[in-house]
Length: 109
Image 1 (cartoon, one colour):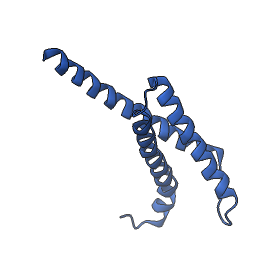
Image 2 (image 1 turned 120 degrees about the vertical axis):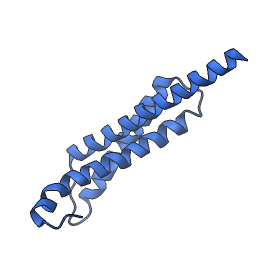
Image 3 (image 1 turned 90 degrees about the vertical axis):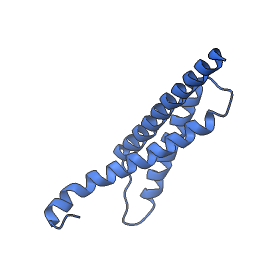
Image 4 (image 1 turned 45 degrees about the vertical axis):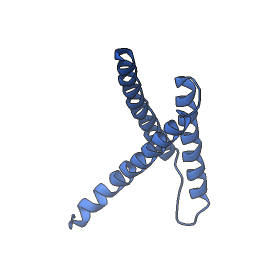
């Protein structure tokens, strides 16, 4: 979309970070959706989801340290974990809204 090489070089790192944040956000949505099928407290569901996302982000960066030409950075683990947490919290809000609407309908019946 952009033909100016200087602009591409400037924007590329930000685009990559946003992409990683988004990918891990989807992971957070999937984790909390999975754990919402269990009879756990909301706190346990959320903490487990975020912890697994952080673990996966850490393992991904460790793996990158072993690949020639790649590097791992703690900053990337932080960004990825923040993406997971955002996905988890966002999906948890959506789940709670649906639960409240369902409970309202059950009371009316």
